[in-house]
Image 1 (cartoon, rainbow, N blue to C red):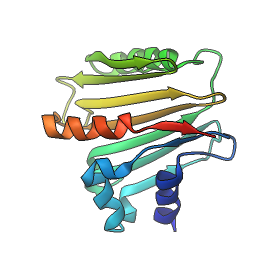
Image 2 (image 1 turned 45 degrees about the horizontal axis):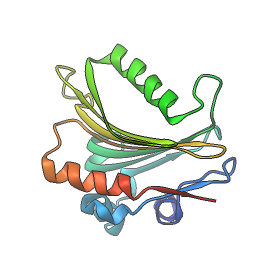
Image 3 (image 1 turned 45 degrees about the vertical axis):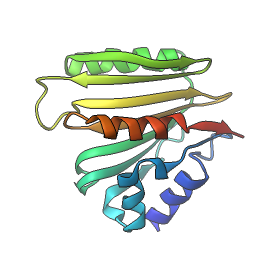
Image 4 (image 1 turned 30 degrees about the horizontal axis):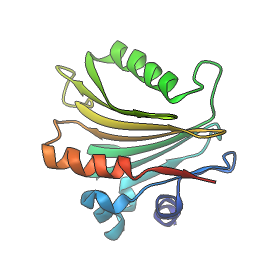
Length: 174
């Protein structure tokens, strides 16, 4: 049942009862993500809506489970806060929090009104830490959305291109 719920969220958009907007994206653009759903790998999916102001999905792409992974996708929906109102604000928050935990280099890939796409590379952080990541943050009218492809190793060029196609497919609908 958990897998079915998350699959519906991915196919129909990411939303929560507290959020009227939905983020749609084409999960088929990253074949290993599609395979997780096609193979009914329930142990690879977690959904946490215990705080309706900050809903988090994690889909482990490579690994044994959602708690033991080497590549994953995070989908986060949050209500704006006093300190985080825009995509740029959330980007700044991510940079500040990540920098404290592990030295990282960030690069803005694309920036449009209400959204930002960026990458992160971390080095010498340990094998259990994220080494490379691609993010897309989209600001809606009442919520902020984040898609975050994370990997505990470097991403090769083909993997990066496929993730970028998925991130670029993200769009808001009411």
